[in-house]
Amino acid sequence: MTATEVARPFPCDAEVPDPVLRAWRGVTVDAPVERVWPWIGQIRLAPYSYDWIDNAGRRSPDRLSDLPPPVVGDPFTAVAGRPQGRVLSVANGEQLTAQIMGAVMSYALVPVDGSTRLLLKVVMARGRLIAPLVSVGDLVMARRQLLNLKRLAES
Image (cartoon, rainbow, N blue to C red; front, side):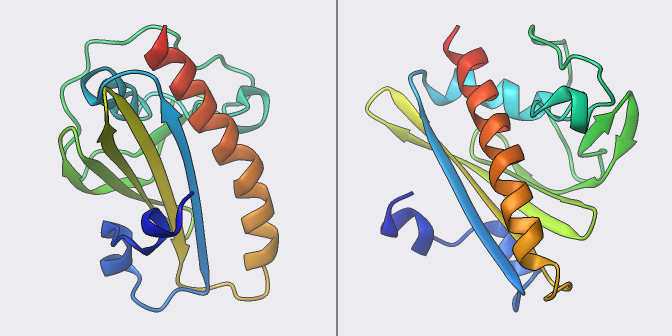
């Protein structure tokens, strides 16, 4: 991510004003925001990272479902079909912020010349001792998730 992207405010910053962990991820998706956003909403069905770890071996859907837009209070994702976490804030086509397992994360979509920068920031309020481990695990899992969402939005 660029210094400008890291410096930008994310909605998760308001949820966790003094985090022990801050982690940023980002990919460029060769598709407009309108094609990327539905995949962000689809995270409510599956994690889209390594399914054998994050989804009890179930494959994340590779086609868009007819889901209504996400709203505050919706489950954030599902693991093996079971709801997990909670959506904290949404601006359709712009950002989705959610809480799961002690972490708060914001996905932000930034249009750039017909493409989209898909940005993710993860913060945690507690767990200073485990934060380095969480950061490494998140690096692997979040990177796979963003690359899977990129691939799906571009296809």
